[in-house]
Image (cartoon, rainbow, N blue to C red; front, side, top):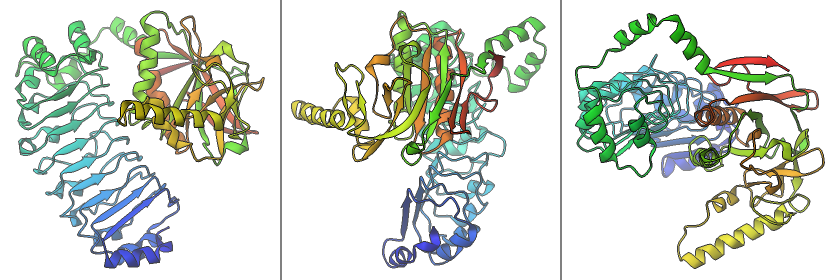
Length: 511
């Protein structure tokens, strides 16, 4: 904790004026712990506390009025003190991967702020500060939050001179405001994975726009939907189509009009919408329980699992489902499997129940995906590392098979987490590989899905939520089986429960 770092603090005072803390358990760090540290660091330029389970920040941080960068990602912050008015030199803020539901109003006073990164929180427009006076703001990343509309202050004229990047992907945004045209310098706009309807021709009035992502939105215009999801489509082609077919400026209904219209929907429309949003979850299936062994608690302890039913992997379904997993692994949900890793298995290819445990690398044997024989985890990792090096030498560059990007996560670990079925078959070795014996095939209709993490259970649930939501676009008849994870008689996790899949009506069916 902060009061255990006197030597570091003394060195900082006389040298670089920076604190960088990573993977320290500051979960119990309180204001009284932090106050002595901050009182000594009025010249601090950079404060970076990452992946440290930090729950609160002391008001005494306001003493550090020379801060240029505040970096607090991957913690457990639920709120922040309203002290940002003291940081008039602050240029960079990263608060991503926390539990924040609102931001302090004093952020609106940071006239020199250039980057505001608040991805992967629980933010909505309620309680969001006014950003309209932040004339130097270049980058705003509010992806993976709960916004149901574009924060109105983001499109103010004052921000138009310098704001060049907005990422509001993976929210609940339903419409794009026409005053987006104020953002004369915008180059990158990401609104993928929202709930967008018609796109206004305002998009065609952004002269410097080079990157536009509107994919994974429920457009009723099938041509627009196809263009938006086609990775080969040029941005200019998407913009040209919107310019020709989108609602003209000044003709769109206001949010108030839309709300009024929603109120007078007839009962048949309401029933239809409710049915479309309903997800059946079967509960009470005794064999659908994972036994977590104590051996894995200090290795990779966090796990959620469920069963996907009514899957159709014939034709395009297979490609889309595998592509979705690849996409999520590269996204902020998984961060190249460093945060979470997804495993999928053909349910009838192994014997329940599953045990989640840890084994020494030499004792853990698995027939890895697309391999012909079973080898120890130690041998598998050696082979993969050797293959990676050979591939690098052949290509004379650092471009290698994507699998090898994950090897460093467990390369130096003496024991590894794994899922083992009732007959001793290792079906997965997260975050590296699944078993070839349980791989999906075109005739698969039920899929066992697990998400594991060494960071947090919340990260597992967020990843599983997104996988379910995106899979429903591929498999309209998707339903789930609830799975409990237990260690002895203690419930470790259950998915889905009533707090999961926000915005989706879960219809529980007891089996």
